[in-house]
Image (cartoon, rainbow, N blue to C red; front, top):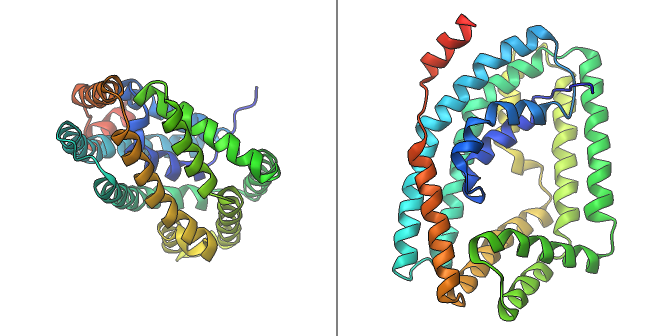
Length: 297
């Protein structure tokens, strides 16, 4: 099977490291991130051997940076959240504030990796740019068929079902009242899928336009701005939807915690404890050590 690479998901996936609270085996996930990142890059285009060799040590340094700077922050947040849950204070205001923390962390990740993303994009050949354009179009077409073209009622049902599945590892089986809360939340999100995909395509179009001038001296600065200011390409409707989504998700989690049974609360506590233990087990390699190891291979 042909292997394909793209630099674009590097930002998304590295940023997603700050959101690994969805994974109960963070140590396993983190130790395989180099593989996971290149696997995701595979889905867009081919890098040549020189580009792969150029990317590898930089990717290792980014992962080491994230492990040594961002994961300790995540550990601190988890300690706070566990204490607040035990005290019955893990409520909507606290969760809204945590979402802001996570958004700021994503900004830090973007700033960290943007020079690497720009440098890799700058090396793409015309054929690679065309391949990237075609891969984006193909993926967006698939996303539109799956998430936008179905009737809105079907989208809402799917959103509700998927959200329940994601919540159950944390709360266990939801009761009828909790399922109704999730369903109400899913209905409130309305046409979020369409707004999200439209904004995604608008940002991608801007990126492809920048790639036409990738040999220019100020290309790295323009790419850094593009990665940092993704929200500039959101429609006003999606901007409102995103803000409302953060608020309503915090309120939903608040309601689920408030209505949780003792067994559900215990399961949530144990999941947070397990994630915190996973972080404590991680041993980070310094960026300098990663660079030396890469040069010695």
